[in-house]
Length: 236
Picture 1 (cartoon, rainbow, N blue to C red):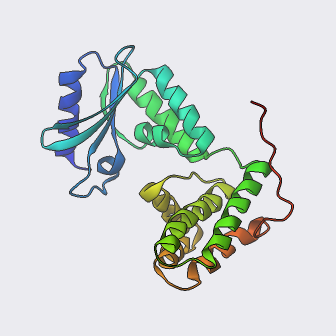
Picture 2 (picture 1 turned 90 degrees about the vertical axis):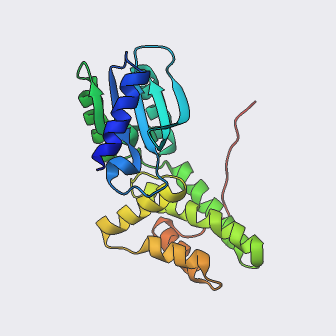
């Protein structure tokens, strides 16, 4: 944890949000794995306007992402994250350094979202599982005769869909981009597996390694799915 970064974040909150009830510093700086290009992810709790608000700025030599919320809006966005099984809001508040806590809400909400992250997402429904298998199967079929840029484009989507099946099928949180890869790496560490390495090696390779790894992920859920898949649409 970079104490100078935390003090910079705290000073910003005090200067720009003197009415703040609480504030948290999350993201890579709070985790202790920041890079030279990392920013300060700061969530601020207010009682009312201008929350909710997202704002990007420069402060004290740092790029800053500000997320300004009320308790109601934090709960709303946390609920949306639950639906997509990507705990962005819960991690920003739960996996954080408390910068400011005037009424106990900083510690209270941090503890609540630590518990929410630890509990994991709702399990996949049968329909959600079948849809993921079907989508991955279609991508595998498309990849069979693809090359060049088309192959690269398919692989970039395929590894992510396969990773989401791996994680959400096992009751783990998902993510996007580098966040998704971090979730797979954490899964590997706790389960003694090597899915992250196998998926990334497969994306880079010009052979069947990605196909083999995706089939390995599909296997516990019944493998590929095409014939017999059915999805009912909603009436407009």
